[in-house]
Length: 374
Image (cartoon, rainbow, N blue to C red; front, top):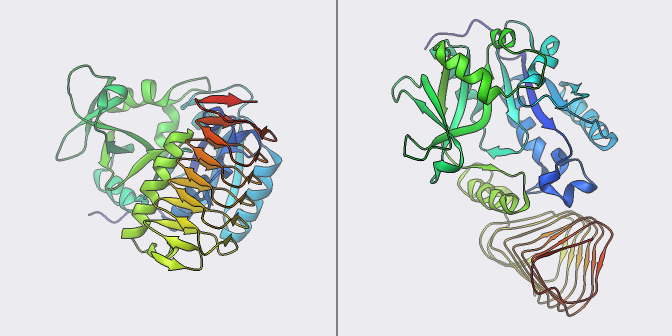
């Protein structure tokens, strides 16, 4: 392969953070979406760690709003990782293309730059992306992932040998392929001359024009991929991430199976070391328990994430749930397929099925069918 002529240690990246994380409510009522933790690490940090490892030294966050909480956190990250983090703030929403035009001054130069959708989770093969991009010499590289039902998505049709993208087919009714856009790109700065400062869709406007010029290539994503922008996909993404940890160099993040300090563990489980779990609790599979959480005797937790500072009583069953920060779950309560916002209190001996609960609320009665509690 050709040796790249640009300095891969001084790369830039743009993360399309966007707005208020409405799809991930009620968690995002109290925490900016990029900071919602998945496997005890904020979503955005999974991305930033991979970007820094690939040589990114300047990060642009494209946002509609700049919450203080996000800014404080990012100041720490910039210091710790020794990178520059800047904000590109949209006063009116600019879609997926406009933010590149708005951040143009930050992205110009001789090096290609990464662009990521903020909700995507995978194993981020960014170094391999740099190699592929350098080799084909085109203007852009799109990471693509295979899906079983392509009719819900826009399908990317590309040359099997070279990866050159031939066309895009929106929600195909007949089978044309099953590769879809994974929301991770590597572009030469030349793309910036294609995008005007206005609300525009990079997928619908910019990409077809690049493909027509034979300047856009697809790179298949090996391994898992998930858009974790809504609660159901958040838990599915967590499950895939834990499975990936199990088979990768990160297996030491998982708690060993069997009886131990954190109860009886089965399957893939992550527990923050500061958590206090009764030895008689049964945890797993696919469970994440955050910092300073307490889990009482004989409680069973499966397929769930319990966020920091939550207290779960004794004899509870929690399955398919996101238990929010600072929650308290009373003794002998069953929670099935629930999403609880920050500071929710669930009384004792309740059966709660499919509840979405806004922050600072209390549940004092059974909930037998899915509903929003506000």
